[in-house]
Length: 331
Image (tube, rainbow, N blue to C red; front, side, top):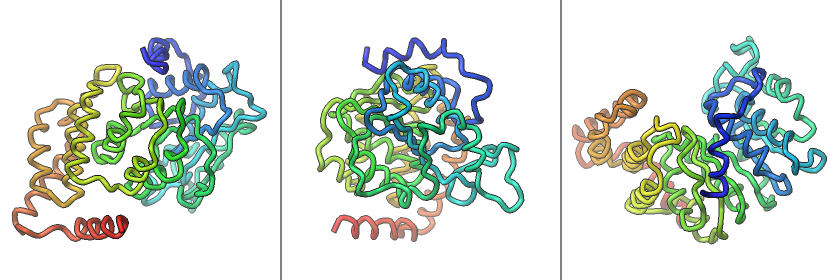
């Protein structure tokens, strides 16, 4: 059993308070966060949550830290990063407001977040706004814990990679909360690149993959991740390597081998290879879980393939722009 794996048998016995804020994270993931705070984290290095949302995950982790025999609330800090407002590009829901709906003329739920997390404010440091603006490029403090629930776009993941992954050390714990999201393949192939230097805790806890760094991560690997410099074939191979390590989540409900195969289709889609993307995705439409939960994904990929067949040899404007950006970044 892995170091983190010893927490799995305890998940079902955790009783979280009814006062825990609304969260888009499952109850299993919230309990796992509590256990990490209670039994795993010391807080001597940075504890970072990227994408705190309405505060449910922050609350669960902070409660565990408060119950920990080793975490010192006087010196330890939990850093919570988020836009803390609703609107285009934030991926936030109005349910993060205490009233359950956005007040007239106010997009920010920061005060609601502070109110919910009031018991933990003495050791909670809140960073509100765009991650590129609220994170410090000159901060090289080691990160003991990194919860990533913010990398919904490649742009944000680059910030995560440059400013947080580079601060991981042996013993650091990382949670990828969106690992069941096929539209975020950068999470999957970057994990493949990290496999020689990490130990996966066990089956994902619902959509969260947990791992611990066990060896120093070479700078060239971190640079390749942050610059997204892997070739198309390398990305597919790296995802395949992850598929060899994980199957279903710990409840048996999410078939990760199929999820990751659909992520490969999105690697092709984002590279402008729409017919190839659909050829990867189409066989997966028979998967019960994916057909039930990812119908919109299949439709997006199918439509792009149809459009490519109608205009053979032409890449979409978005794909052409992305290819130009990648070339510029690699220079």
